[in-house]
Image (cartoon, rainbow, N blue to C red; front, side, top):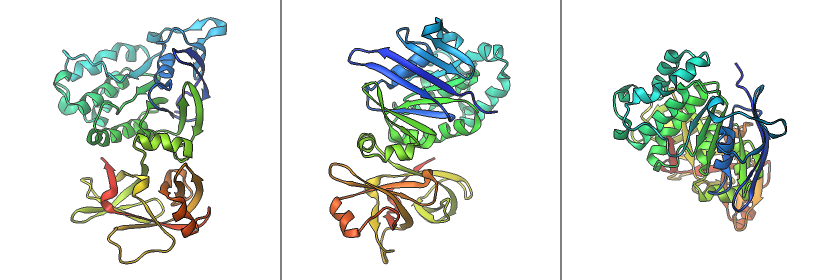
Length: 365
């Protein structure tokens, strides 16, 4: 079943500016990106019904949640939203099972088979070993999984995630991101994700809106948006990475060979997953070297053939956006100096080789 589509046309007054945002979602998962204070969480709270000052329209499928002209303002508790705020707000004196069951009554009222959902959530988020532990005794990554599970178990019509990985260190972000991918693949839910970290938005979202002082300054498919010079500068300061997905082809001593969609292989640090499984990896733009011809006798283990899609100038760099195949999700951005771009004779449509060390690749597993 196709998820209901979210649309909104909102204006919310804030201290320094007014949030003015309008969008009709054509895809399942929408991301809101921007620096702190750009209006992302305000938008999320308005859609959740937590901002009484919000004016305009909010609609999910055929349901109108807000229509200022018609006097419609559905309260938060009647919008059937699964909301995971930054603070997670779990019940610390309850065990995990009781936290997951907190929304059972609402799920059942909406015709959801709660037990079936509970079992699916427990399996997908690997919560079985945690069910009888109190949430105050869990690690940050475990609490995040429980918060996600509790929201899903309530049988929501829309899932709102506010900075789902912000409170976690890099190691835990690498661990939790695959669970978010499982939610995307297993639940036919419309999802709105707020983040100032571009990695999870690239991995999860079909479309991204970039906010600055309450206004949308860019929108579109994540890889295209984050390769724009004005957005790339924001994204890089927050830890921009190129994301690729491949299938584990073979394990070696300290490395793993990953088969990409175009048939090329990428050597990465050794993964613990078995051969044949899918794996998400990240590569920073500054870790990639460019070569006009296939180099020989290099210590770097990787040399991928690609085609240059676009060349875009920032203040002091040239962003070289390349494609391994015709898919935007196989796009890789490298950064070079203007001098290097001239010396290499880089042009859109030309072939290029991407050179990178195996240990410069980050695993998300």
